Image 1 (cartoon, rainbow over the protein chains, first blue to last red):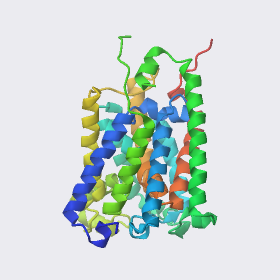
Image 2 (spheres, each protein chain N blue to C red):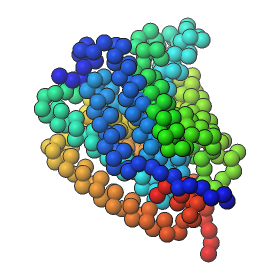
Image 3 (tube, chains in turn red, purple):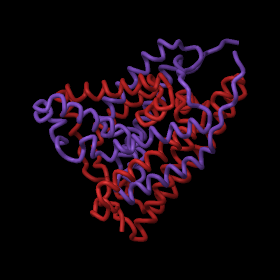
Image 4 (cartoon, chains in turn purple, yellow):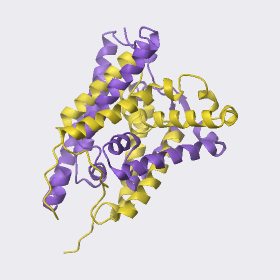
Length: 205
Length: 178
């Protein structure tokens, strides 16, 4: 029964090797789907490119449903995995800072690694920025410590928190995702009529 | 403008399913979700530990990570990111996109783009450490296990993202008057 490594059913070396192999898949998909293009990423927020939202929600949904089934079948113990605790205050504030960083910088940390690797100079600079930000955070941690520990809710499963059945929750998620896909596709179609051929070719839409 | 060939990207739904399956595999074998900012953090902490070991032991944020499996050579996330670098290069080579360039909206100068990329990156560095993860580790992997934190992260990053997108519209959209 999974997860294997946390239950010592997998050696540390193999665990890291699996991390490396999964990383290869992750990087490949990020590039192949267009996540190394800062314009495609920004397109989410202006509606001219629906790609990122489709990939992102499909990935979340696939993982959510897949892990739900594995858990239901008794093949994985979710509680033994990396199950993050919820600190709602720092996550909300941090999210706002990251939202600003997304628009100003045009990447997020994962996409910038893939983009920098494939020669995007703006992504290389972004990576340097992230490292500066992390060092800045560490060196000024005294200022952040109070906020970072605030709003500790412990391990919270969203369905338990909402008090609804997990199956119902997944169904609602699927409906919301489907509506989102349709809305963003229409938004992209609207833009596409007004865009130049160069823009459309660059975005590959 | 020189004639450029249309970029070819794989179907977004197929890409999403594969990415979701990778998350499931990661959880099944390693008990980890996909992540990015955590890997950056482990590298930064490893660097501090090497350069200033005494400081590392005394810094409240760094100290808990000193000497355990978060050191860069034992960090799952660092290996995953190294893999992602290879994976991205392989894909870019296959699709003919492996070249030096600066991605930006056409009306933005290179200088402006690079300065903003640096600032935006720094925002992510701070935000991800405060918010306990980024789009990958906090949101995507959080949602995968139905953690409330993932949904708060999703709404916060994208919700505020849309607000800032409105404020900084000129960075990405050229407003043309007809």
